[in-house]
Amino acid sequence: MDTLSTFSLWTFVLCMDFVKGYSQEAPTKQIVALLGDDVVLPCFLKSPVDTSNLQLEWARTDLTPGFIYVRGKLEENLELKQPSYVGRTSLSFDKLKHGDVSLTLFKVKLSDEGPYRCLIPQLGQRSYVHLIVGSASTPVIKVMSNVSSRVVLQCESAGWYPEPELLWLDGEGNLLSAGPTETLRGPDDLYTVSSRVTVEKRHSNNITCRVQQRNTNQSRETHVHGTNH
Image (spheres, rainbow, N blue to C red):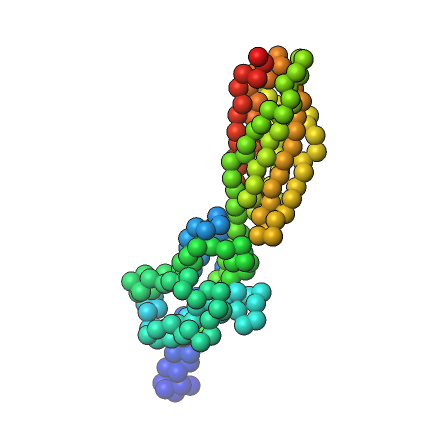
């Protein structure tokens, strides 16, 4: 093999190794954001390569077309952008110089929940993020009945997403046997949950209503004290 052929072969191998280093797909990351908050969808290169002059794309993989941010060499291409994301996305030019292609999404909506892909075509670099949107609120406890030796309490909490669970706890943190949880889903897709519990007055010095959503790792609780008088 002559010198030129050997040089061409090594050049090809080195180029393939370079692309291969960026084409490996990382596992999908799950990111949780609360309704109305801003969230950063992460996307990093293995090496701090300057991507400020490269084409890059952020897209929802469950929508067609699904582009939420498309950048050419110098600026964003708004013609391809999903209308619901206009004015709500941003990239840091300074961070692009160091291989950080993370996208900031402002004022998160319930409809933003879903799978996202970050792609840099020239490098074959892509990564995936699944955004989970949550909403939570503090429950309210009301005394519905306070006669004889028993007290009936009602706990209600509105504005949750996804659907949460409601628990009653005694002063030691033990679960109390309560009535079934009633769940309502409003036109805004947010959930309201409520439940009643009957407790003996001698056991009702410290009762807790806890509403929690495991997928979003959100929990809110309210305590009531001294219902035995």
